[in-house]
Image: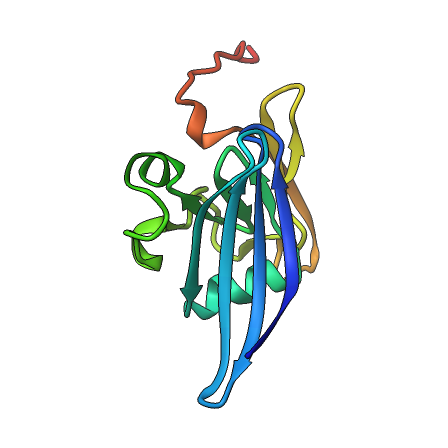
Length: 160
């Protein structure tokens, strides 16, 4: 059995690293994800993953990892650091470690989030999404959204 690292990401807020590894056994190809705490120098979880969406997203590196949330297009995958800290790394399965959320933004008919989105502003605690009109193939609008995990309300002045 051999394993090699296929992709990695670093969570600056939580100071944790995510590694996607691929291996080959006699029975076929497999993927594992390793989550490690850099500050405490310990492995939080190391387990097999089978979800093709997660594997493909990590391989592509077309996502933003912030505070245990993998933001991409109009979706989020939440890494359950809270459960990993409480229960330990060997007790949890893939479906307990990763929660999937789709269509997090309300989009108009024919509107789509551009690839390589969102852009992240750590200073302003915001994500920036650019949308396109599928039919016209032109930029449509810019959406500024706070990090979903912060549970804060940001008030803006309304134009009169």
